[in-house]
Amino acid sequence: MGHRRSIYRYYELGESAIVAEISNLIHAHLPDKYRLKCEVQFSKFIKGGEQSSILTERARVDLVIASVKNKKLKAEYIIEVKRAKASKRSITNDLQRLVAVKSNKPHVRCFLVVVSETYRPSQFVSPKGTAIHKTIKVIDTDGYYKVRLVCKAASSFKRVESANYACLIEVFV
Image 1 (cartoon, one colour):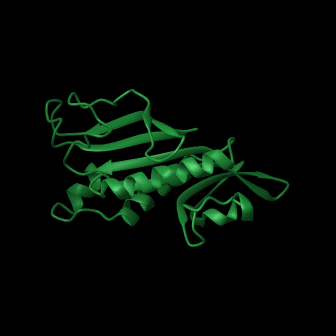
Image 2: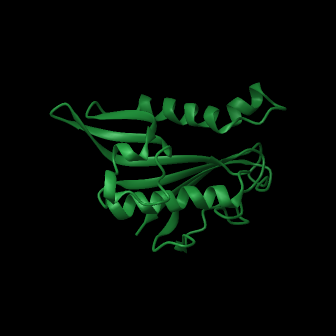
């Protein structure tokens, strides 16, 4: 984010640009036994009757990391990406979809990556600029999430409120 911000100083990156950057980073470090897929419909790995009402026919997950066995892909990791300035409802909707996937496919690890530009996302980052390490229930579900990692980029260690953040949040049932 810091690098992109230095290039486009007065322009906030859209979610698609953030997804593209994350895709590049993942792909560069992905072992050969995995494939990275972008914008995959939830219905590709949640079949028919298993599908929750929150996983509508058109709903897509931002990133899927799948293992390759006998030329077949098996989803192992599901990653949704959100800008931290997205509405709380939008972030909650993504968390609810991830809970629905996790409920139907317990072996799949489900993550939400929240990225902020020049401000601290207080829902996930403490006033000290570190991860909020507690279990938090996802509204209207049986699931919960934990902030696994927070990465901060700032011009000074003391610039907690105006730093760039990337938060990795894992969803559980």
